[in-house]
Image (cartoon, rainbow, N blue to C red; front, top):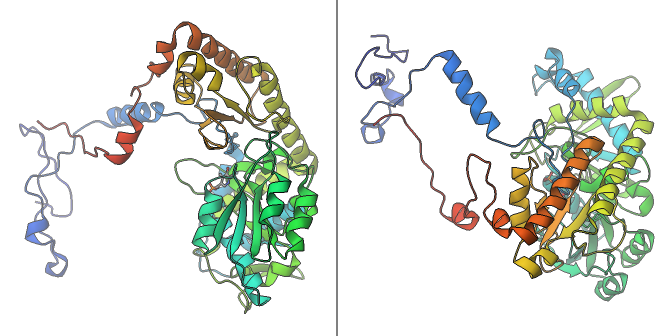
Length: 482
Ligand SMILES: *Cc1c(COP(=O)(O)O)cnc(C)c1O
């Protein structure tokens, strides 16, 4: 018997494969107690059956390639296929990560840095963070390093109550106490409330703009001046940059540190946990603290600079998710400055069109005009028929739409929230279909609420008890064996 191969015993009654003989090298032998008693039940199937199996599985899921995905704050836009081509160029994809003098790769990073500097108004970037959340960690660590170098011990980070959960989590993990700032009726930062929190203890304010109500912080310059007056710095959570890409810049608004989610604004694929890229940009005063190494251009050549004594150090392996940087650079080069401006214009137009059409049918907790996304609430439907945001989200699946982000912003800020972001890559027809579905669902909520509370009806798996599914997951390997 060939001990290197898995051998199928053709025609054996239970069609199970023969077990491996004991490992050859006794030094690496698996202890007796840990070995399985029964051979693994591998199914014996043809290639065609296998292809059908995995294709069917892939179609049981939602994806941006198959369905509209208005997941607010996530900017689930189309990821152009040409990016994938570029990222797979063998000379780049096959580069050994230790080849530190790979000029084309360094050039890609350097050029993307120039793009991000231009759109953000920052003076330099690191591409190491592999997600927005890791970018926040780097950014707040940079702010901490800056204050420390100044000899200031600051203890507090201020964060609006509408912020993404990663903001307070980041500040806390960096050792800061978090204080929440209230939102106004319009959905913006309550500047009077902010003033009551401003002391010499404040290390910084983390802000998303437009915020997660989709509302532009139009008092941002005053806010920046107030925070700077007490020696604090401003952190820009760039998750919503798609709303004003190419139109205005966080640097000009007074932000000192930014992260940009390439996997959101710059169409590198995301979902399912990665791979992301959350480059962090800073103003001049914070450049010395950037993670190692930094890509520099000297004449016509590029190099990695490790000689930065004040750096916060290394935050991920090698240079972050380099493949994402290539994809983002291709996107930026295809669009150009004019294309980026048009992108954000269309994103805002699509969102405002939806907001205007759905306003008669759903409550909108904050009344300011939205930018690229808007928050609706199911509170009217809840009062009348006990219908929740979850019910509406589940019913949308039956209409072929991925549910929007729900219960964010959080229930203590606004009830039964549904955060809807269409992005610029959807057609008018698709946006109209979505609006029609939402109007239909509002009608169903009145006339036949059971349709909603029992939704989804058309999926391979019906509604889950999410709390139980999360707390007591049943994980099992399904075999065809008796
Ligand atoms: C997505 C998002 C983040 C976190 O970014 P990741 O890349 O998912 O880690 C932070 N803030 C806001 C507002 C977001 O939408």
